[in-house]
Image (cartoon, rainbow, N blue to C red; front, top):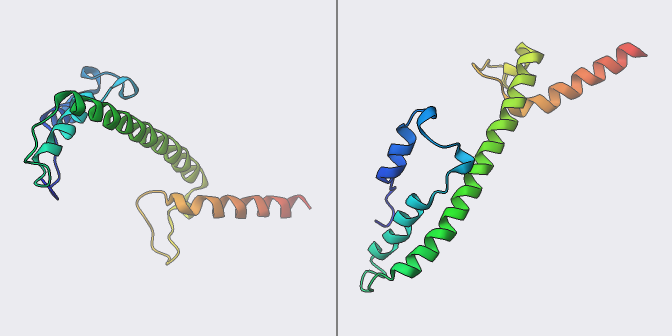
Length: 129
């Protein structure tokens, strides 16, 4: 399995479920996927000569699941804050869609938001003087 991307059956099933069919992602424990990942370590040619230790695999899976939960929370946070930037960009208008090279994007260019806000604040300060 070295070098190949693996998507477990449970991951595919979880990804294909409707929102009403699955638990809230912050409540999802990732153990099923983590167990599969831990068990796959014994498929690696470097350790394929060893007998699988189920208890050790479970301990490894718990660590993997913890990191998967951390990554999932990080992604939820990223999505939330990006959503805030998109709302700000939509409020700013067309300028939030224009790239440095002058091309126009279909979506808000989040990286341009800080500079646009600074420019808008500077303009407001100039008007108030």
